[in-house]
Structure formats: C-alpha cells, structure tokens
Image (cartoon, rainbow, N blue to C red; front, side, top):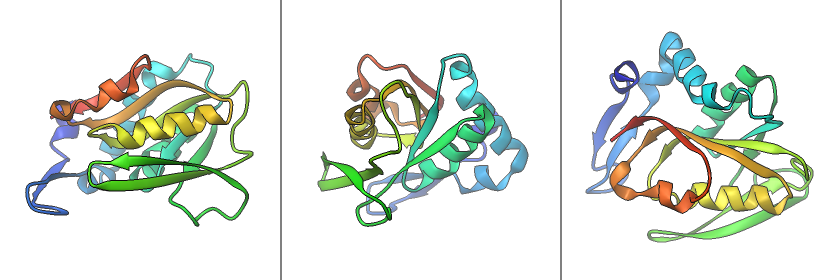
Length: 171
C-alpha cells in the first residue's frame, strides 16, 4: 500500500488548526493508482452477495461509485439534508463539535439488500456508524465497510463493532 500512501498528501491545519488533513486528490488524479485502490477496496467483498454500494457525501461518492461499477452493482448516495429530490429517510448524529444529518431516498434500499459502505477515510467513525444505522433502518444489511484511509489513533473502527472493516492505508 506504499503506492497509495505516496499519493496521499498531508495538509497541516486544514480545515482548522491542529488537524492534519489527508488529501486524496493526488490519488484520484492518477488513473493507475485510482484503479488499484478501487480493486483493493472491493477485493474482500467480491463474493459477499452484495446488491449495492453506499457512499457518503462527498468523497465517498468518488470511491463508492467506482466500487459499485467495479462490482457490477448499483450505488446509493448518502447526502446532506435537502440535496435529494425524492422522499427521504434521515438520521442525525453527533460529531465531535456539533451534529450532522444524512439522508437517503426511501426506495434506495430494502429488505434483502446487502450493502458495502465506502468512504475515503474513517476517523472517529461517527459518520460511518450513522450511515450503517441509516442503511439498516431501510431493512438492508451491512456486508462490510471499506475505507481508503484509517486514522488508527481515533479508533473509529470501534464504532463499527461487529462489522467487517477493510482499510487500505493506516496512519
């Protein structure tokens, strides 16, 4: 995974002082590295009976839609409030400093669906855990969660207890 790590740059003090932002822009710019990342993200889930991939706004859309294409299944966007044009179900959750809400079309998933949740990065795991709950509220099951980057010291994986978690690069 050194190939991927070489394409992730560190931006100090973004979006605020003390944060070391992991910028995946150079990774998605390089078609060979991007293709490698998507294949590695999806590899452990190829024979899991998946019916959909879900990704959170916004960078989860990049990797999630490519993962869905790679697996030959559909993609479900999980969006911020007011962005989806049809009837939605929503979940609100607490963040380190405040709260957030995600929405999904009411007919995006249902009973019997097996979903792979994909995002670029897992930090504290709050958004990923809320995304799993939103998907499960629709009656679908989580087959696993896949991330390009994991910030190990923030222990976000623990908030996804009892779920298969696959990460490519650890910091």
